[in-house]
Image (tube, rainbow, N blue to C red):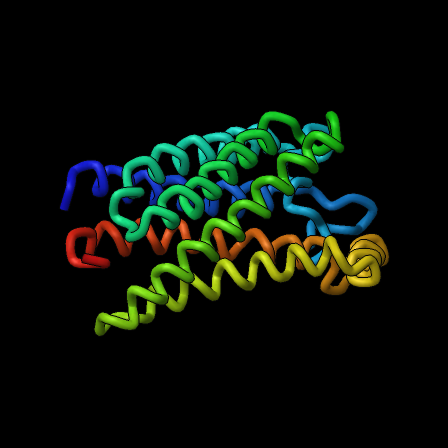
Length: 222
């Protein structure tokens, strides 16, 4: 395996793993207000970085900034492992934009300038979904000529699921209002649940991809 691909794969693993751990830790430390505790189905992920309500806001914000930086560096390292010029330029390029969005989310917490924070979050969600989908399509084509297909199909599904839920929430006002109403009306699958359905697949994909390339770097897509 090329040293650059190995290094990049490790960076992807570290990026995703440290962010997942940070989210779980900050979530566990989040206090209850008026009897209402943090709920992954109703509370937005960004509440964890709110400097007014989250005791460990700095852990979350610094972690997501580190996530974006490590993701960008990791993608630079592993880009040569992916097949196809379009895949490298468009797919991986979009994921690099997503990394930039993640850095912005941590730099501008939700309780500072919400519109800027929201713009960075949208950049991260949208370009992660597009990038993984583009990569997934190319890998699915490559997989037809090989014996291994599980990772390629998994990649395509991860991108499609994340992107579809995001676009549906944005383009369908009824769904958006429904999720927002649930978020402020008590238990239920509300805004936090929808947001996680968009954000979690790419994060897990980054971790899985790092591990996959670390184990199979020189054997795939050749």
